[in-house]
Length: 137
Image: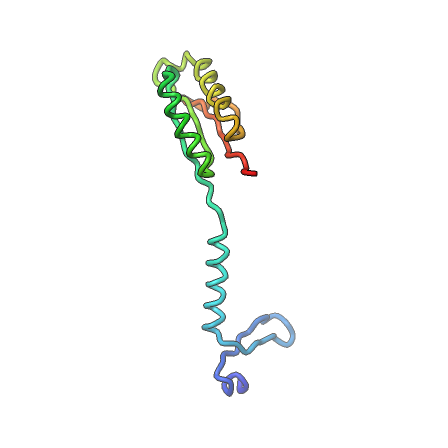
């Protein structure tokens, strides 16, 4: 403790369970600052996964399909994942096949931009399909 006071630094206990306890003479405020800086740097290197959604109806027209396809391509180029789904309202649940055909056609159109993560799957009133962007070479 006397050495720490002479150097005007802090005596920090590193390992209290060791015999004898391990201590270190450091500037504690500087240590905390550097630790915070390291955490911030690690956090900035992380990539957040963005999931964009595109909604279709079972009777989506060709023009609407092309419009949504363009948006999907832009999302995938930006590196976001894509969740395309067909929403069945009321009695339209009868057209499950149409919804599946629509999603498969959408997957075929996005073939060069994305890989299919999940094939069409019916969850309640939604038929969902997931896409991940292809890696750039």
